[in-house]
Image (cartoon, rainbow, N blue to C red):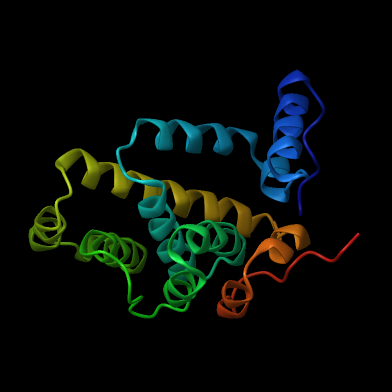
Length: 188
């Protein structure tokens, strides 16, 4: 990373302990931006989008912008829920067979927003509605994508490399699918 670690405080120590308890180590993203982590939790807590749908959104967003860190993290999550083949297809910008129509619409929506948010149309939003997404879910998905774009921009701009532990935990199909972004952090 290009920035110094945040000074230890009660909140930073609690965040690090939580990360260690959940993942077994403190990842570079946690070290970089504790506020982003809290905001992500708040967004996810109020949304009715499923964990799998959010994973589809992040994988489509990360692969569209070329971010290896989130692609590894969320590709692994999606692989656990939908299978490593589906996760790898999304990460490779392929059609991703095996998605529901709703998930496919969310994947396409994320890719469109990353590519050119000004080119979205009322028809694009109507297509989301036709898959059963509510107005609130369409809004939540859009905010979630925008949040991820902000998060990816901060991480990539400040040199956050994917943790080697994260790469080791990812299925082989997911690791092979990610041919973009910053290289994986060296083992300590």
